[in-house]
Length: 138
Image (cartoon, rainbow, N blue to C red; front, side, top):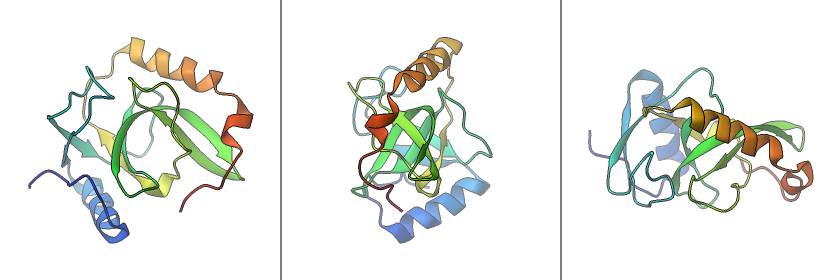
């Protein structure tokens, strides 16, 4: 299977999410915001999981339709619903809250305990008020 393109329509996103439940889906990495864990220009295998833990590298559809690969920092309630809090390792701030329906899966990469602890600490440090504005995209 060729790597997944960077832009996803909602139909393609739904189809890929279904595929990721059955087998790993190759995803081409375009940027370096997750280096050195996942280098730009490489291909990462993404697979759906029953649970996602802080430190996991998630693939999800961003609000603009781009496929994003960022580290899970934790979970928050956003407007009464569960949302993932993510951030690229090289980015200065976290992403807009991610609805579970937008998550394709977890990248199959080794996640050292240090990265998990870093993600958990960052997730706990995010002020609640910074997640309140706006609405959670569908």
